[in-house]
Image (cartoon, rainbow, N blue to C red; front, side, top):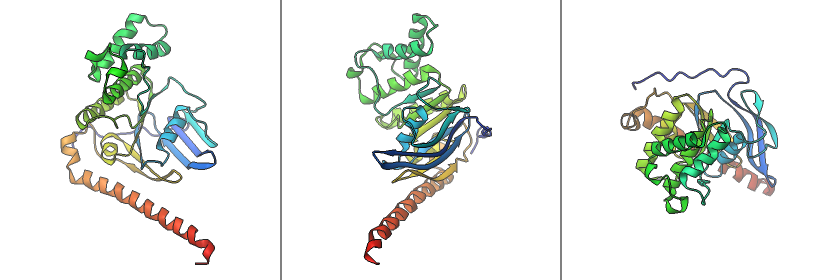
Length: 281
């Protein structure tokens, strides 16, 4: 592949996002088990796994929206104890205020992150980001008048406008058609690279993870465990048409699919042994 070599910063002690010996349970049911993960400043990491493996829960813990039962989470050496404007979050469910227009939704967020700036400056910035995601013509519309995909693009614009050094994205393109999904994937890559941000992106789409990430962290299910971390070898910028059909891309996709198949079979075997243990088998 051609392009700029994909050089990643080394993870210095205390820098970036760090997760150590993390465990999380809900109502006594284990959701995440023994998660150790270090993400360098400026790295783009995709959390990849099937539904129910705890990807969203891990993202919420990184956002400070949940508290771990044990273990530690930190950003640049500071413990994560609650939400912060340093970590912008894009949820699956849009989370736009229905009584506000798109522009008003974004300017409200900007008022918190940039209280020193004028209302005119905040409105201009909101409109710039709405134009960036293709919603300039809908700036004065309320969320209820928009499709689900348009609402999600509005939510993405709001988070990007904050300028947070960390972006936490929870399957943000799930409601979009393939064309807008591809466009917004490229937009997120542009925003990530200039200036460089740290991105943690949750997805269950293998091809999306390979196309976007510097590194893919694969989570197995029941409870969520890191079963493999895979460095993506392709250089940047990535050309979608050339990359997705390449033998190297197809091989990597099949390698990831096979690792998940192995995890499923291992879980089935383990459950079978447990179920038969009391019968003397």
